[in-house]
Image (cartoon, rainbow, N blue to C red; front, side, top):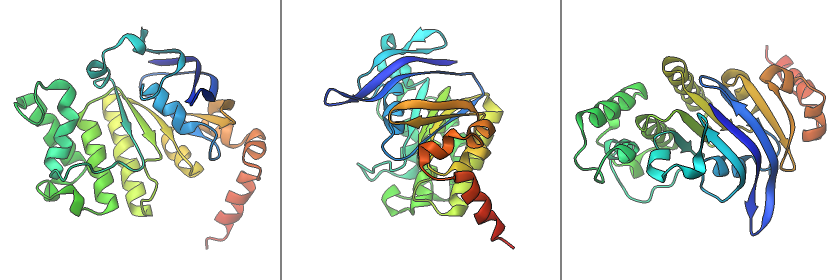
Length: 251
């Protein structure tokens, strides 16, 4: 579905990611793993066309560099770890922003299809009881669910996830993962997600891409990557042994 070929990108003329290449098929999930500063978020920003890049990214065989921004928004959505509140919209209005690429006006002239997509996302994320509240009154967990609902209302083929569970408590992490998994299975959709918590990769992804210093250190199935020797060299710690030791402390 999406192919990344020889991708390089960075800031101030310095490449943070170098010659990244991979393919993700429709209905699959790719977890991007690696220590801080290895280029994970930069990779997502390049795929979302937020920053300039060299190389080629194709979506269903079409180079995204030639796709108009509004049309690209119908195909790819980015859900970050700290979505900012610029204006105190209601929950409903915030979710409705996900339909911007499909509508002619800003929160105006919503079509029946737009309204159906908004209501469906609100229902799926179980936020009907707060849809009239202002988003600056919400907790962090509620707010992340609202932003996920906005992303689902956008109805993209691919969601890019940049640490979506960061700063969420365990309950909200589990719920967010459940919503994403359900969305993928029901709609044959795809995600590419950056995660610090390696346990989340086990629950979500089909494949894992392990990065080190802006390059691919390993890419394979999640189980293969998380059980490989390269994991220890990239993180500088025997991750698997630590995880098993931690698990053994549970009674």
